Image (cartoon, rainbow, N blue to C red; front, top):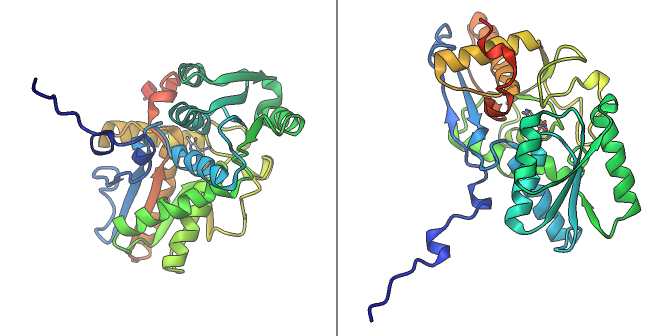
Amino acid sequence: MTSIPVLTPSIAATSLEAQIGNTPLIGFRRVTAHLPPHVQIFAKAEWHNPGGSVKDRAALNIIREAEASGQLTPNKIILDSTSGNTGIAYAMLGAAKGYRVKLFLPENASPERMKILRAYGVDLVFTDPLEGSDGAIEAVRALAAREPARYFYANQYNNPANWRAHYKTTGVEIWQQTQGLVTHFVAGLGTSGTLMGTGRRLRDYNPAVQIIALQPDLAFHGLEGLKHMPTAIKPGIYDETFADRQLSISTEAAYNMGRRLAREEGYLVGISAAAAMAGALQIAEALAEQGQSGLIVTLFPDNAYKYLSESFWTED
Ligand code: PMP
């Protein structure tokens, strides 16, 4: 009998975890065509992560650090309040690693998100939409306090493992992919993990790198994933004195840039990614006007697939 060769999994298969990070750094042609050659913009294309967003990085490091410290053991349920990309990342990693996942979210979270979370087998608990994401946070805190032996409360807004994910990965990748030539880093603020972790790493490499934080211009906005910090609960991991500059971006400017990136560059990105590009362009145009050079890097948290029910895509 001839034996059939079998590839050992360690040779044949890349684990799901190993697919997180090392995302491409992309460039642009038309949207940046008015800039002089010495002012460049690049973006990290984070939808290349297996869960489809930058939050795979944070969720993976939150789980890994909790496993290492003994806070997360195989019998525990991963618990947090999120309707967004972090929830999807916990759901995916929970499935891959064998943990149950329970998420609290306001009842009005988008149907696309709920379907994705349900498909991964997550236990969803709905909170009053009138209380928004703060209502979901309070409900989770109460449950975690009541049953600490049953749940691991991942707590992305206050858990330093969130920003350390970007310190260990995103910042290192940007430095290497730009061969140390990056001069500015622009990122939107949600939990602030991306900005704080990537920014700290880039400043370690070169203290002159300018860190620019981007926020919605108004409390009521359409920039999903981003927070208007003056009116939001301040994340524990956020230091508002950290960034060199703050930019505010209108929802309309982001929608407009989203359409342009799709139609002129072939990148169908999420709304916060479009906002990030609008911010990066503001920085680039100011440098060009002053006759300065710069290599600006921003980060595109996800692509548009979860936001296609929004009507602005075809409104122009
Ligand atoms: N954009 C999107 C679409 C997001 O899901 C998030 C995470 N909430 C962000 C931006 C902001 O990232 P961070 O939490 O690292 O500040």
